[in-house]
Length: 51
Image: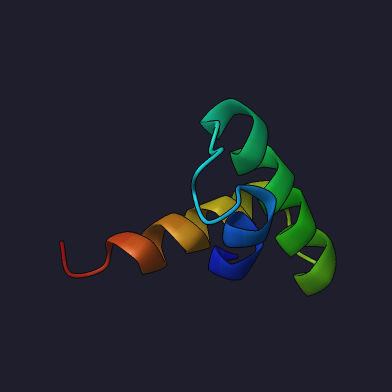
C-alpha cells in the first residue's frame, strides 16, 4: 500500500487523506480479496508498529 500511496500522491506531495486513503484501501482490497476496512486496518497496524 505504501508504494500505491507514493504513486498516487507523488511521494506524499499531493496527499489528501479524504481522497487517497479510501482510494488506496480499495486498490489493496481488490488485490488481496479483503474488505477495504481490513486493508486500511492492516496498513495502519503495519505503519504504526513499534510507535
